[in-house]
Image (tube, rainbow, N blue to C red; front, side, top):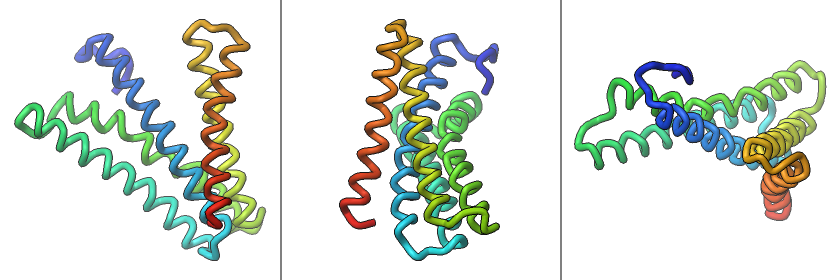
Length: 171
């Protein structure tokens, strides 16, 4: 779904973009937790890759089923056409959250770096992306650079908190 689709109102297109970013942030936080947990496991590259991919698929399926159930309950029919395309567009970042960790795991499989280092790098990239999205949101709100950086830091703190909770829990 492109931003300039003629079949969507500007409000609907903006809502879809906001929903898509929300799913991306949610998926990033979830994937940070998964890769940190995998970094201290003995899953191996095949197991780690399978876990990352099935996590992303599971997140996407859960969101899609929930969206379809909510639509069915409210509108009394399954989502089709434009509504279905919007659901798929909004939920697709839940699948793409596996790309970065999968690339890092592939590098570990090629012995470019250890699996633990690859997974912790993937977590670090996730935290950095939370910071970047927070900064972008702060800038778009018109608060200036200082407030944008503060917003980015607050979002990154969430990612760091996930890492600390996983570490404290021993996995």
